Length: 172
Image (cartoon, rainbow, N blue to C red; front, side, top):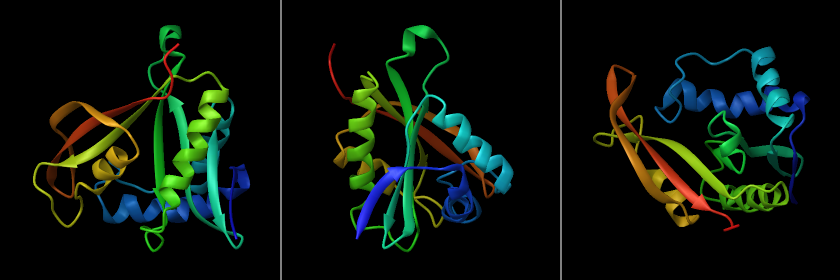
């Protein structure tokens, strides 16, 4: 059975297990080191103060998570947020990302959010650390590419671009 619920700080070990793969093996995250469990728990707690942080469980096992956060730290941007999503590396392609984003959008609308932004690592040339699957996933979810920064991130000794994608949830 699949269910989606709000994350809890005690989910940190499993969420960190999912995230650590992306830090160690991909350029999807530009972090070089896997954060510690206490730091990761603190990130969850800080996010939950203002934004939704959701986990997807199948048969009681967390298979993915997503959350929203500050887009820009000015009151004028309070109706916009940045979103992130991670699915267990062995569970991709099962529709979990779509389910998570669908629930996240509902929660964001309840909280008065109008715009979602995703900051996505993008390869200069696809390689073994990064392809364009995140961009394609977000495109399928209704996001549009609105900006690109060139060769702004370095990981594994290679330069990567960063793109911004936007989804308008509601016009107020």
